[in-house]
Image (tube, rainbow over all chains, first blue to last red; front, side, top):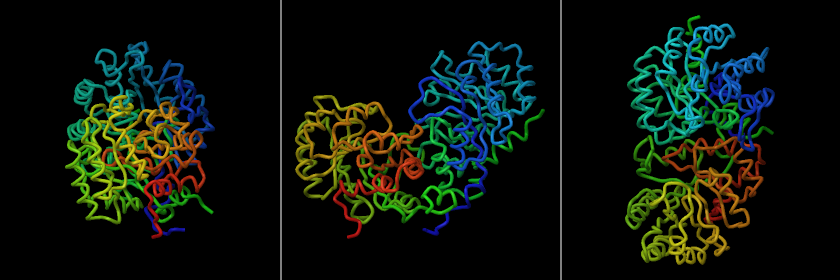
Length: 267
Length: 261
């Protein structure tokens, strides 16, 4: 066995996957899976200790019923933390945000998610539809995962993000996409301008993206995500284990940053 | 005996466990590269950090093929034990590409040819028929010399069929599972992993559909991060022998490179 060490054993980093999905979804690729048991097996193989999960039903179809499915599926499983999905662009009534937040916090969820996609023409933030939710989340300091499935951030959306990040400047926003590639320069500009912006790592495919963001903005701006079951969680973990950053930065990215954000939630 | 992934999870480097050859990377500028211009020392530093012994380099984003090849040749002279030069040819330049390919293979001793078909299309689409036909003399030359041809994305299946002794490496090929199917009948079609986009079980899928003999590790530095395709291969649920093939043995065979010499 080669004895060259690159860091501690994977357990020392306490990987917390910020982007994991359970449940069936349309058009699964051949490597996909759906059940909690398969997710646990994926986590064991990859060395992920905990995962913040949503149910696909919440993200792709009906957030109200889907959020309940999330809670039901992970009940009694201490490896999972529930992610609460908001989707007014799916027709979820925007006038009962207070009740939704109350229900979310009562359930133990400490992270919210919105997904934007070309599906249903829901491509991005809309002040009329989304600002009351962002405002309510900010009051409680609930981190919001904004997920763009396009595969990147669509043209024009950066300006909408700028406006939202500026207006809700104490709301932690975690930006997520299956592929960040051409967006680097725009993303770096926003990281410099908005301290409340964080990047989820699963789509950060650019050369030394983790290293560059760590050097320029600090490792606290990176939140580990695997995007299971679309992507391979072991690859996401490997990316951090072999990153050219210090051990304490790896630990921060792997899980401490998200844990810190969730611990700061005001109930 | 622990697997490579189990060792990595225990905190150990995989360096030395496999011969790793990067089939596809670049130097200098690449559009969208967050790290900016990529120098030769930086490439070597990255290879050392990640246990990559050799890298096949082309200057595909350079606007002029002969100038790109001259610069590449100067890099090889500086690091002859670490990089293989892959000549750049322009499929949209009538008549010029054969002379350039001949110069690079015969005079400069480059190891293969990169067809810069991304110069008029950014997607992984095949060359148009007329552009592929214009490349026929280059393909024939490379076939005679058994030098691999790397195409940005998918070359026309007809070209692959017409040159059964010419290894075509479909760059970024593991990115598109459906398009790859058209090349299943052709054992001279290879797929490189030079992408940051790996749907779960990509490596397993390609091994099942095409066999590990037809997949080669590529990084696409400095656009993409080599840790992603390396991680995809090393953590995948395939045999150790198949990992060895993908990470280096296949490419060593295509280049005629014997690492023990």
